[in-house]
Length: 124
Image 1 (cartoon, rainbow, N blue to C red):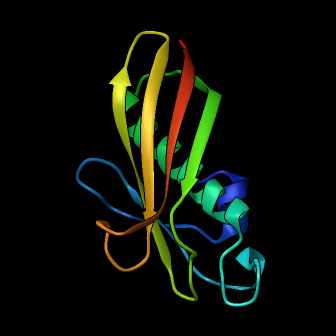
Image 2 (cartoon, one colour; image 1 turned 90 degrees about the vertical axis):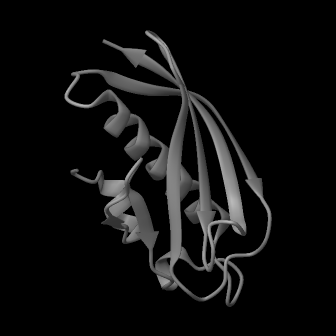
């Protein structure tokens, strides 16, 4: 998968996943918010990239453009000075609209630091 420029700006790398790729964002000055914590915008960007990755994997080789309709992010705890991972899950894939959820975590996927719900328009 080719990462967009924003993903490269965040320093994202990919780990293979069974259902969807796992995106990894290292902690550094580029994603720093208040001292010792991740910036909320960087977390939101990581979640969006994970959602897009899951949707593209679900669409497979199909040539379709995806456009975000809306996004809701829930911040559950502060992201600390360590790598952060995120994975998306396609909850509904229709002919024109897709619903995707994404979670971001640092230690365990069962203890997310943030979650997002994103609706995408699919233009085929």
